Image 1 (cartoon, rainbow, N blue to C red):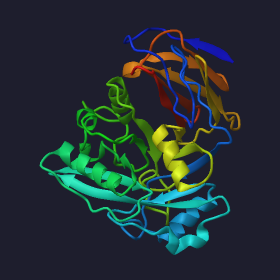
Image 2: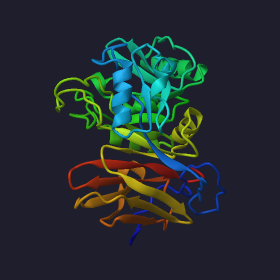
Image 3: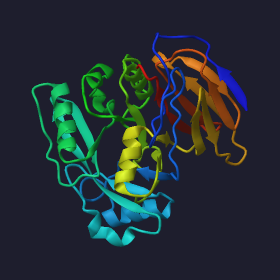
Image 4: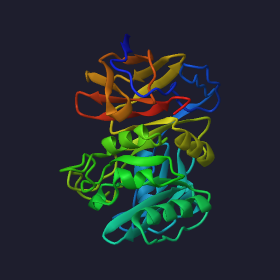
Length: 339
């Protein structure tokens, strides 16, 4: 176990937070979080079926995820709400279907896609006289249906900038990795990648959590890099039970990590320590990077349990674990009480 200390100080803001079920904030220290009896649940929040532009039926898609060890799935067809009750026989045995929709709108040439998670009814897409207004209108529409919004693939068609996203209110979830090969996760030219966009928003004081998704369309035929296959990105949520309400609360609280393949045993915050416990897989080696404001590197570790020790003020700290095969796990940011 290696203790990592801050290389630099930034912004005279106070203390770090990892959101949880309950907890009190000792001044000048990490929020000590506890979720007694909670477990980790793996799921995908963005997938398509023949109800919109996927190549397989809702039952086939749900069964693929269940057979591949997922605990929950949200079917998010374009402007279509698939009632999980229609394939209710797949629920149970540690698997849960949660209703969802990809609310699909646009502004001029820009794609405005907002997922609605755990919706109670179909949400009709909305438009406004500005791009930001259109994004906001669809986020609001999801909230009005008691759903949880997440903003999808901002770099798809180069549709949404960090400046646009910073003006949108009442959302906490943003796709920082999308498995579709045409969404430009890493940016290009003068346009930043989604991790950089995430850090821009966090540095501005926004409490945004980064999710990884499949956005899968192709379940039949070849699985390859140019096809939109499942199994590329997911979230692992810490919740007291496998229910839609508990999963949504965990996502909006940031009590989860996002992954393209790296698995974690646990994430622990205690006092001024942030610990990332990595699940060893084969002979893979791991590098954990702790990042702060503006994406600055605060420290690194190559240990199975990577530890960050807070020694000065930071508005937030997040961790990124990369294995020797290039797979990633993103630990959600922990914020300071005054940020």
